[in-house]
Length: 181
Image (cartoon, rainbow, N blue to C red; front, side, top):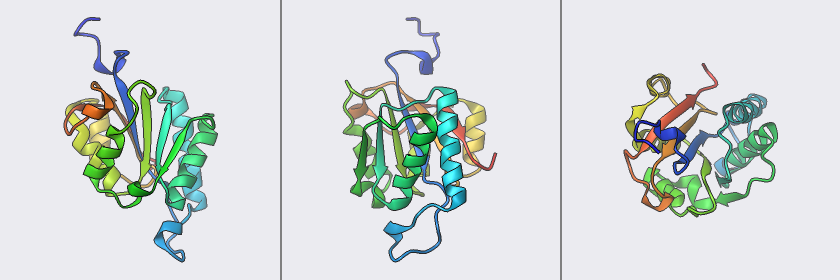
């Protein structure tokens, strides 16, 4: 394989899909129990259709255990035909900062997972996507990502190292999708 081949097209490169949950209700008995609105469910289904169309299909999902993130993944998986993808509902992801979220990603099995989706909350997911980005890759995606990370925003990053070696500024930006665009 030549060095001139695009990084994202190299078979040894993993993909990380970073997804913020869809639009959630404003109130519930506890923040952890907030659900998606109808708009949030529609946004999440749109993400699923987009992932399928673009070929960014995960082998595994790492999802915060909050109701709105679980429901987001359910809608994404149904729309993308990913109902058989193994899911880990991670309580630690609910309140994780970027470093803790990165630690959860680093624990991913290198042999079993080529594409991982992480479904979480802002500001963590936006920070994670920005901090992992090496400053190269899709300029168009970088410009869109710089405009904000609204509910159901999703970043796709090419990861050229084993999951346990992932660090800040290592991943190449492949794509970004916002429901506002």
